[in-house]
Image 1: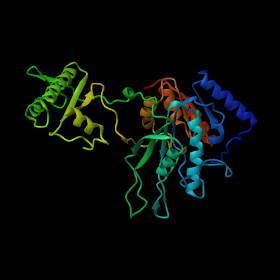
Image 2: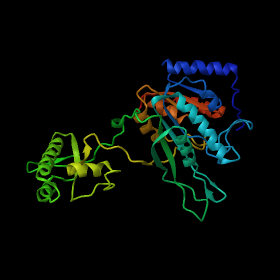
Image 3: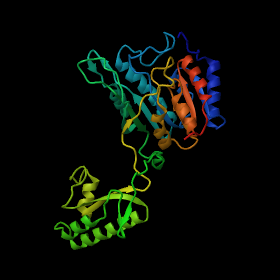
Image 4: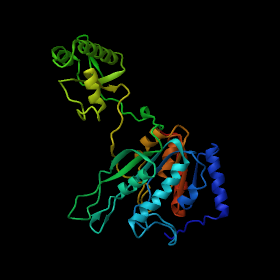
Length: 367
């Protein structure tokens, strides 16, 4: 493929500005802009994008379908320049992201001269040094990988970092909760949690405790009654109780660093509850890479399954999602299916055209 990116001249800049304004004013659902990400980002107004999900080209890994003199991310001679370029781009993204917005950044690592460079973390730390707050490091287990070396293990995972601009940000946790498989039951008139916890053991431990005062025992029994009532009312499906002197705090007994340990010290007990609406996903996601749109088109296609939770959790309904390295358009396609708007930017005219063809097949909303 010998496609060359369109020249980002005065006319195309005006058109990009016009199309971006259409997205912001809710006149269009999506746009794809062929051009240099940093230059295009500079024309997007402050705090107008709700969520950014992207996977930049990996350093020194592939030759991308652009002109030889293009400012392609990933073609740097030194990987430190790669980190600097990405930092500049994400500084610009920090400007255009709403105060409650999120950035999801997928990066793979690279071996160079027999050494694993730790590039995802080099980029992540650089972003943190520039004001980003890292909320999660999701491990994307791709469940398959290649074995190109006989003196190290196969690499089958990549990082998906979740960054925010401030501590209070948009997060619709109920949209991504995993519904419980088991439900509470009633045996002989007694309510029992989804895993068979009736509270009898805890009641006995409270009664026989040498570590709780009589007042604390009374409070603990009442709290246990309240928990069992919540299960009976369908508000909870399961729980665990930690009692001073019987069980340890989950992570640490140090009251200076553990809120649970402090609660145990002050009250004498605490509960871990599982709500009836389920639990949040873990930070390990087992998702196979995309195959449909990678044949003869693109070597690093986002699987749509990887995008669903970030979009549902961190972009409001009809919000704007941006991918500054949009490739064949997976992020924007999934955004439309989930009733969001999308802006895709890519340096390759070939990939941009593929994305436009692909999005014509989208029927929204799907999920």
